[in-house]
Image 1 (cartoon, helix red, strand yellow):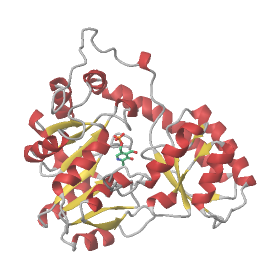
Image 2 (cartoon, rainbow, N blue to C red):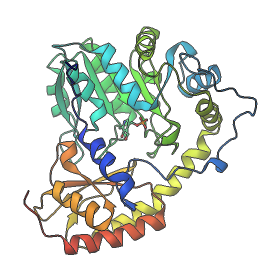
Image 3 (cartoon, protein in one colour):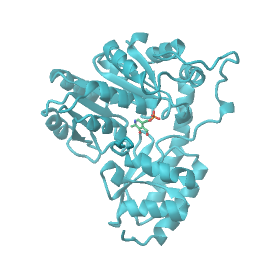
Length: 367
Ligand SMILES: Cc1ncc(COP(=O)(O)O)c(C=O)c1O
């Protein structure tokens, strides 16, 4: 008798990428920028040995991350396998069955799926990205006495940002109800006048960061948690069973990258700025999609004007035109598609031409 398999709650967006990402030629949807090539990156020391790394991260990287979060010391830092692992560990150690926790709606699944899996109930905070009252849904969500509140700014998929003053208010609200605030800041640098990290504004709050987004290096698979040392220790103890440590090789590259942060962030801006303009022009000149390209972040969330089934539409575009725009269904918002703004602008422009052909040709299929 074989043991039963207990499948995890699926993460449909990432399953969809697993199905199509390597089989399509034009990815107009990814929340990242075109990464630099290895020969454009700082060279790791030639005498580096690929041992197991340090449990909390290489001390040089931990120091650099602490310095990047004013008020933090190395005891506040855990280097993780991308922010995906950071979010997993935090939900595992901060939530238990029967808890409630607040997350943005719509939102990227890694912000809530682990919490749901441990038996906590997700309370949506409706992101006020289309002129909604900015506080009504927030105030209502906090009345549920959540054990944890997760915010993401700039927000994937809408590009909505929370100002420094509003983050202050959120941190104060969450403290007042005796809860804990996590801010997913993986795109923090990709907004005009970024606020400080939340940990620097409130040392009881938790910053989650990554090399994948603003720094354009998802293949390093490195992120971080900056938090109270008790949280760091609990996450580190759990990490002994997930990834143990990070790779000394990628940590060496990441340390050099973080020490030159403005250069890599400027590179990401240089990639997204022309694509924002390209998408705006393209949107103005076709009948199918309507929406505003946000000023911040790596994604735009755009309405399909034709009442088309967006899951089917996105599968069709992937299968027939080799083109990815992500279905809003995977963010709980059928009728929308997500664009990613970080690809090479020539590739992005080509992809938009191809998208127009795909939309012209599309006839909804019933499944
Ligand atoms: C908001 C958000 N948080 C976290 C992640 C995970 O990224 P990584 O594990 O590469 O840092 C993503 C990836 O798309 C994301 O969009």
